[in-house]
Each structure stands twice: as C-alpha cells, then as structure tokens.
Length: 112
Length: 113
Image 1: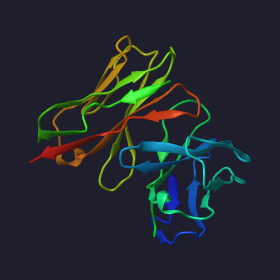
Image 2: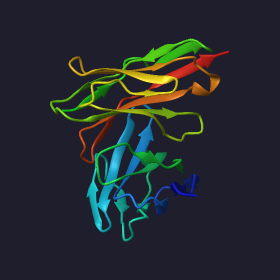
Image 3: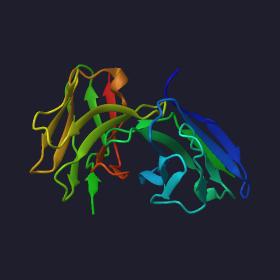
Image 4: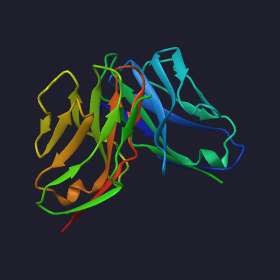
C-alpha cells in the first residue's frame, strides 16, 4: 500500500548502543522529516531533508545522524543511545510545495 | 519568533454534542498554512483539516470546521456531533511554507458516552 511506514514500531535498547529507525515513503515526496514527541515538549524537529542527498539540522539534532541516498528512504541513527533519547519518533513527508505533513505511525524507543 | 499556543490542555464533551478547541498563533508572515492534527491512542498523527491564510472562507471537513480569524491570529476547531472515536489528542500546527512547522502542545479531548 502507498504511504509512509516506520520500523521498528517498538524498540528497547541499552545506553551506548547504536540504533537505526527506518522510514520509507511511496509517494516520492521531496521533503522528509524526523520529529521526536515528548510529554511537555510537543513535536520537535530533529532533521529534515529537502531531496535525496540534501539534509539539514532541525531544532534538536545532537546525538542523531541521518542520510538520504534515495528519495523514498530516510533512516535516523542514534550512534550511541542515551536515556534522554527515550521518546516516540515520527517520520513525516511532504511534497515540494507547502502543505500538510504526512506522518508515519511512530516508533517508540526506550533506552535503558 | 513564530509560536502556536493551545491553552486548553484537556477538554471533555458528551457524545453528540459540539466542542470547540482553541488555537492562537503569532507570526509576521502574511501567507501561511494552519492545520489541525488528531492523535488517537494508536499514536498515528492524522490530518483533520487545513486552512490557507489567503483564503477567507473557513475550511470544513464533514463534522469538523474551523473558525479562522486572521487579524486575531486565531484558528479554532469545532467538532460537531461528537463521536467516541473523536477521543484523541489534537494538535494545532503552523507553517509559512518553509521546512519549519510549529506545533502546539496539544489538547486532550475525551468524548463521554
């Protein structure tokens, strides 16, 4: 089915481990985004990408790495997970023009 | 700086009744987009309704409508004939068309049977 999918939906890891959250969209949207959602903070932008091979930092990029070698994929890597990165992560996409974001189902990450 | 404020952390409404969720924003831009997203317990963020600032007519989607007051920088969401499935967190969001989207902190709506 067309849409935007995230995997895994749930992940438990330990401090210091590397974790990669995957995001795949089938619409060929130009823009893709990674947000984290925490109680009291709402949605905060981690990284975004305007096109393949073009990425840029958002509001809270520290401790995260992204890549976008193909238009449809936008993985988010936590190189050395910390407890403060326990959160729900949302991937989103958008067309090249202004408009609404389309969200994935979210990935709940717990760092012990 | 652009901001979005949702002043009602929690609300409840009886099934079949009407409820209005408030959202105010601040921007110096003249053209922008406003959205209401619904986040049910399943966690999925679902677009409820969108409004382009250059359109004077208030957007409507079935039981959902907005009251867009550009001068007052207000963008409230009205849900008519509330249903149990409307129980969710509702987020107001703003973008001026760049990569940046500003989200409010959300209003938790509970529809009572």
